Image 1 (spheres, rainbow, N blue to C red):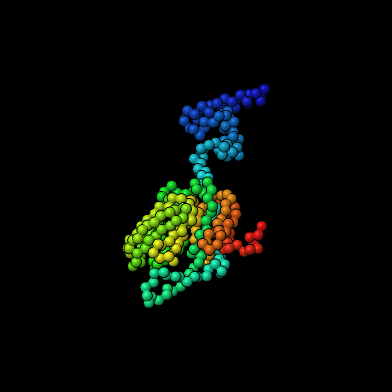
Image 2: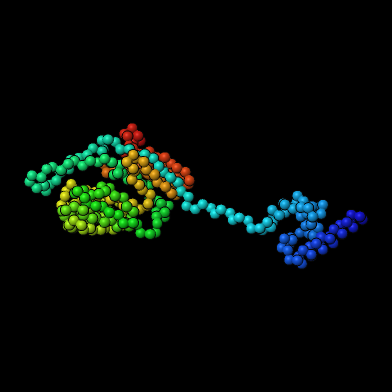
Length: 288
């Protein structure tokens, strides 16, 4: 009987507490549980002193201790990295003597070109996949230039993205007639003098060999690639490709005097894959 009286008294007290706090509009007390249980949970059994249950209840109530800090958004576009060192066999870096067909009588033979950095003619790129193509910026690629200087094309190898417009400025005091018969791009810019420039849009992926009708020893290559993951190594052979979507790819090292060197690579988000490249592949490693 005493227990029933205590229980009834607790219920009446809890109900008065609940009505009182709700009347004053305190959202802190708008709890979906009974009155005395609220009071005892929030303040313990010794009056207005928070008991252990108070902190558990506060932690469980959304917004009870003020707004919670927003969770960090998931990391978007996290990509991996491929880096390494490319080397070229010495047999492929020998410099050949230039031959000029239209020399005037008494003109001294041209000096042999000094190819101090053959790695400047290497392009390292990833073969395209859907993920790599989707990583291409929707904005038009920046224009590029293949200059004619000292009766050579500068640079000798030019990698560009599909959709790039390439300028062909003539810096020489003679006429040039730049052309290509490549399947990826066929064009003929006709003759034009020093200080002039012509341009071409490259809209198809592939290797474009460029020549001059007037100077037979002039040649260059334009590599038109359909994803932005390509790079030319520095003079020490170091290269790096960043922001690559995770996945399995084929890493290609292109050099005009060798077949492309292809290596399979696996890229993970936030991690670096080290991939040394040797051009060409040693015979012992190229055997199946």
